[in-house]
Figure 1 (tube, rainbow, N blue to C red):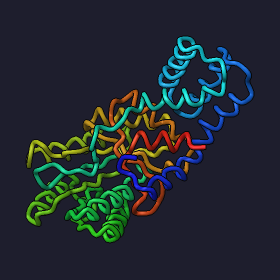
Figure 2 (cartoon, rainbow, N blue to C red):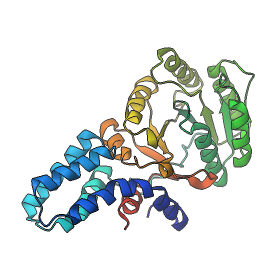
Figure 3 (cartoon, helix red, strand yellow):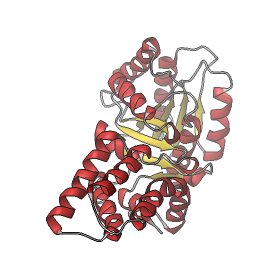
Length: 312
C-alpha cells in the first residue's frame, strides 16, 4: 500500500475513524434502509457528502457519476452503492505516480522547504515531524526559526528540533523573517546540510501585509538560488473543513503553494475536505497528520486513504 507500513496503515485507520463514521457510516445506514435505487436515495447520499465537507461541486460530481453508472450498468440493489461510491471517490483522488515519495530530495543540496499556514493549525509540530523523517532517512536537517514575532515560537521549535535531531538557526525576537531565512540557508550550505525547513509566522490569511512578508521571504530565498524554495507547504487543520479551502486559495495566490499538509485528521469528522481540496485547487496533498507522535505525519497515499475510509 504505497509508502505506508502496517503500523502506518493502522494509525491511518484509527485516525479516520470519525470521518469514516460521518461519511461511509451514514451512507451505509441510508443504503440499508432502502430496497431500491432511486433519485431520492441518491439525493440523500449527496447531502451526506456535502455535510461531510466533501464540497458541493465535488459531491455533485460524485453523485452524477453514480447516477450515470446506475443507469448505464443497470444496478438495482442499494447494497451495491457503497462499493460504487468507493470507486467514484478513488477515481477523483487518483493514484500517486509510480515510485513518488514526498520525502525525496532534489539533486542539488540543500533542499529548501518553506512551511506556511495560519495560527493553530499545527505548523510547528508538522515541521518537527518532517525534520524527524528526514533525519531518520540519514539527512542533515537545519530548521530556520523565521517566526520571529510570536511569543515562545523559537522555544517550541527548539524542543521539536531536539526531538527530531535537527539543528536550528534563530535570531533575536523581532528580527526580519526574510533575513533569518536567508542566513539559515547560508548556514546550511556552510554545514553541508541536506534539508532546510523554514518556519514562518502563523499568518492570518486575510491580512495583505502579512502575506507580503511571506512573498518577501520567497523573493530573498530566490536571490540565493532561483530554485529556492523547492517546496512551499501549506499546513491546514482538517477540522476547519471548507474554511481550509479559502485559506489554501489565499496562500496559493500569495506564495505559490506546491503542496498541502492536512493535520489533525484523527480529531475530526471532516476528513472529506481532502476530496474538495484535490478538485478545487489542483494542489496535491503531500502529507497527512493522524496523531501527536513524531511518526504520525504520513505521506498521503490516495489508495491507502480510500481503503482506510471504507474499511468496515
